[in-house]
Amino acid sequence: MECPVCATRNSASASECKKCHTSFASSIAQETLNEGGVPEDWTVAGSSKISAAAAGSDTLDIGTVLAGRYELLKLIGQGGMGAVYKARDKELDRVVALKLIRPELAKNPEVLRRFKQELILARQVTHKNVIRIFDLGQSDGIKFITMDFVEGQDLRSLLLEKASSHPRKLLASCCKFAGLWKPPTQRV
Image (cartoon, rainbow, N blue to C red):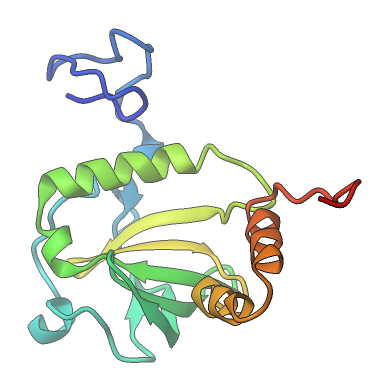
């Protein structure tokens, strides 16, 4: 087993990394609830109530409800990992971003394991410039992640808009996004 923190190779039966001592122990935080409310591993899934065509697709119809809880409201965009939707969490009555994992990635147990471990570690980061991840879920064989939804312009569009202006403004914007912006004290 490779440590997700320091990348040290450990034996498959190791409970923690021999180098950095990161725990590999499975916990309820590393599981998701199935539709019956029972914890289960986030692994390659089987049965599907959503049509086979939809489950094998990169996108789902608006209005689809996943896990009896997340109603898809609008397709926001698509990327390398999958499609991202604006969705309503009907249980908590709040808007979330819901990212579907591409079916070809969701079928690979090693990709799922690494992706899940990365997300679990990301949940430990708390910063005003980092979006919170709420849940790793699966519904009818479809893997998804829910996270904070932030209304606004996507980063790519914003950067393209800024790129047409002065390069220093673009750099200042990038630093601001990264939380590194400090107003200059002297002219360079």
